[in-house]
Length: 264
Image: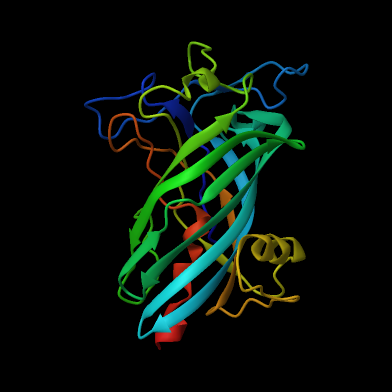
């Protein structure tokens, strides 16, 4: 059974954690304090944070092989580096996050995320970080499936509360929001697992709050216009250029795995 391998692999400031000259660098040994000023000490993240979640995508075919898409998704960050059974740490409390995004694509061609998508990270009910999607793209296979490791997305922080994210020297990364280039976040994904059945009501509500026209009230995944995906696992993140973290996937683009049925 395939799973999406996703990673909240690193949080870095362009000015503070640039890795010039190394196209394959992996950001390591940063700290995450999931309860901020609470009683838990910051957790060392050696390489990645493990995620589990899902996403709903609504596609609109605009003529020929062209389509536009809107997407909402969520995930939970529950452990670091594989969890306590393999040398990592089980997070307490866990973090949750919500994503909203949109874009366009062509079956068997280019998939593009529009700037302005949002990613909000929560500790309990507290919104500890907010990110805006800067750019995103992918090339689909000829049969419109999404090749592994070919999507590039970059998020930039618009707000981060102090006390949650630290670099290897325990510098609070919230202090670097105003640094040249800002503060960016990276994920990695290799696979998307399409799910069948009724899309959870929380995604229908989130979609209708974000987009017009509305869908529902009940939405059933159909592998063409309404897609429901699982996204969970972990993966290491490579930094493709100094100071920016590119996403290699992110279950949020799982829509490409099934649009081939429309083309057939």
